Length: 392
Image 1 (tube, rainbow, N blue to C red):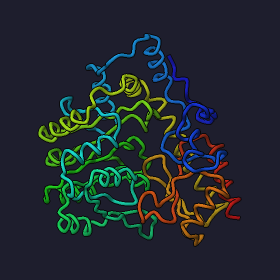
Image 2: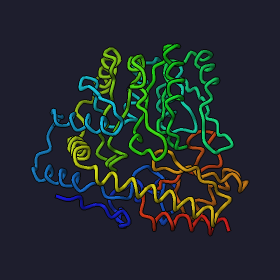
Image 3: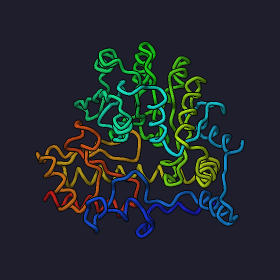
Image 4: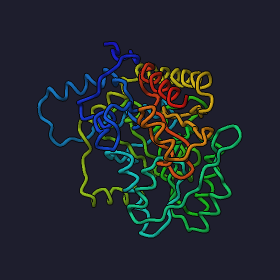
């Protein structure tokens, strides 16, 4: 049976499906007719193999408590080995309903109230919220943008703050959302060595690891044997196969003591089995979704090229930071010399677009907007034309 969902130009009407992206503009303070390219899910139908597996499950008619058998782990293990050359072990695996939930469980498992947790802004905003809402101290090692437009880690500041603030945990984003960096082996080993030296646990969010367009994704925990003892690796099929609403993530914790504390905290939260549809979708995606994945990734790459060319030709004031990873684009509007409020007015009310404003990711994001490029090209073109018209 062949893959059927390879037409990524197709417009799928997502309105009136209780879709967060399209159906909740008014509830979130936006105009009703706004064009949304904000939240990180795709406007593409997932692999038809995933659809078929879910249909078969739905037709069974009983949706009771479920868990995964050997085939599930084999599919997950095989995908990670093929994609990243790393063999994960079954006993390392803890399934959660999502990575943000896993981050919160890690914060609660490994730190106490008032202790410091480090992040690298501008970064995915739930990183800050799960620290702050759990009454821990947020320590920010701000990424530095250099003349080439790329962002780099300030490693001197990284180590200084670990010592000064007595940091207990570091949450890494790799590939980085929203700036699109795929961290090099050298960069990862330098932060890994610093964390190991100062007994800092690393929670490595690698949810975008299947979206690498430049460089190579390195699984941090696999780079050195000692990193396994201090690292919790967070993965999920949700971004790769557009199944975020099915709520399943695969968290790998080689250190037995860390794993025991993590699972105990999950049990204390009252949570047990993950969504049965999520288990079905994950296994089908990793087992049969290769053709769809490759086609989707090629299409997104072409969207990046289209976007870059359009901006250079029509809106040269807006600079695009071409992503090394993720399907999210970090756009720099600072040359327009607008205040935060003026930029928001330009995007929302003049262009009629719902993007993620840069300040959501921290102060270092001021003057930027994050755009989700995983959509049909006609949708992306319409958004870019709206930006051009609004600026002119």
